[in-house]
Image 1 (cartoon, helix red, strand yellow):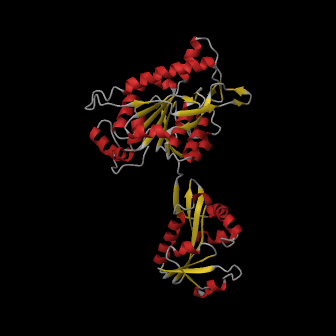
Image 2: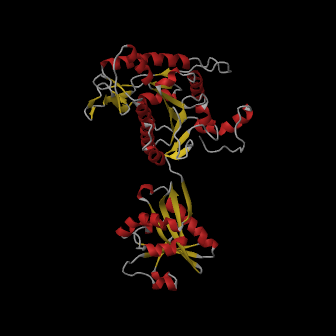
Image 3: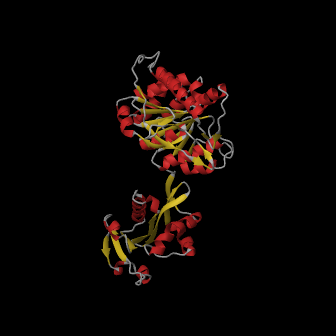
Length: 441
């Protein structure tokens, strides 16, 4: 799912020219980007696989750097059932005993060979039929034992310790599709069974991937039962925390973790939809659930409902003396003077403008500690300066005890309290001893 292309008309499969025109902005945007995909084992046996491998080959030829991770749970279940060997899955992880390890090594070899064969077909029935595609795999995952949890010894089940990006990166740069089975090797030469969801997350973070794609049975739904099309990582994690589908709840946590560690977008696609991947990447409306690292954000005028959020934002700065103290009652009276930057329902920056004749004062400029240095305060101050200018102000003033250099860098000059308008000068707190800065508009 992507932002709308310039054209207002939705792509239509019945009109390939229109589809191509609408897809072209995305083709350009994705070129050179890294995408990591996670396929469940059952998908390797589905009718969707031939179409998917065709599409993956297409992505590589369009200039995307593609890493394909695949799981083998279904294949292991079948092999172990045939041998009448019991196998436990606890909290989403298989307890991998010797028999299970042998089964996954066999299944990994068969699955990798089949995928390599399919990806070697090029793009049949197209002008690019026979176009070569190099597929590479290897010991790219360093693992360690998952260990004993709540008394359960997971034996040969492991967790990712390191992704060998120095080996994977050059292959992607050379146009190879990198294929990763759910196996890792330890520094002592042991082999470990790894969850494919974890492998994909670690690989995406290590490669600083632009997109991470998980294929799942069904898309998550909201309280009304409608498929969720877009959410921030934190919102999706909170929504699915108590979901009866334990795999989906665990996956939401993994998605949020990937986003917190730098993956900009994670896409959840239905595994039985053969067109899901291309629609998600190259159409306006997409096909699945897009999870964004950056929460939805807007700058707007404050309302009375924002008083609590502003208090929470400015309280640490008031306690440290960086901002003058304002009571809730005063904030409620002054709320119409405030603008805020809101991100996913949270106030993360604010500032206020008070006009008086040909002068205006900017006050209470604050940014949440987690979001400083990204230009939000700059944007709010610029907005208020423009508002002051439109209201006929010739100069804008502000008081600060610690951020003077920041304002000087933005065109303000230090002056004296005598430059304040009479009414404002009468309220100047000499005990606080704030410095006064002025900028001519």
